[in-house]
Image (tube, rainbow, N blue to C red; front, side, top):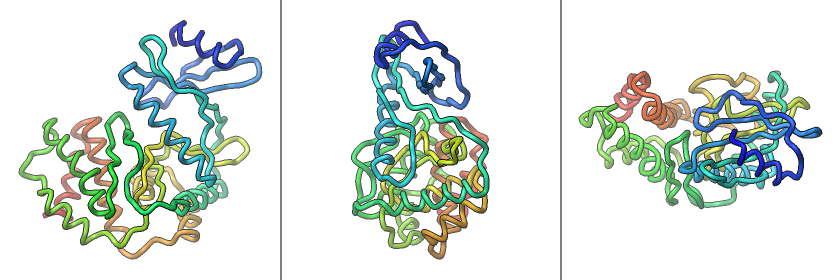
Length: 287
């Protein structure tokens, strides 16, 4: 971290920073542990152009916190200093998850999904999935939202970047029709939006925390589909979730469709190793 930013944060906190150390896990931003005599903080640092990305993360954490269902790190400030943007947050000391703690995470995620009182899909603010823009323009119907705000933009980006051939992309009309056929009558749920194993932690005192959200109002099964894409969630997590919020028939097929979005995101961010999985789902459901 540069000197100007460190001095600003020290002034902001009203204390002297005794130690600054890099933390692992920052795919999009640099992440640092800041230590004072009595406290520890996490600071994400990015380029000035990525200030909106960090602001969106702060808003997402605050939205989840307002639900009072599951813990998130407290946010202190999000600003820009010189050529850097930063997000300053509470540091959570984590421990290895146990079966019982994962069950708590499952129940609390279900409570988050049930906490929503809105009747539309999308959100008040656009945000990001990884480093890619994520539109949350609102729709009255879930199939319309998922087709137009999730799949179609990522498919277009994949074609524009040469990751997918245009001839293998379904038409927008067929994509929407298939979503309408496959999706049930969905009640909006408040979603984390990017729930892989790197985006939750269990604190030293056993409290589950969500981090790095990409929040919006959508089908609760989307978060669960992401948890199963790369693993890292135990059976106790799913058992506890299903006890509180049972899944509807057809969830396995919908899981594929919801994982398609995240596979497209990874294709557009990281390249062709995700292409076979994308094409498999497109072929299975949209031909």
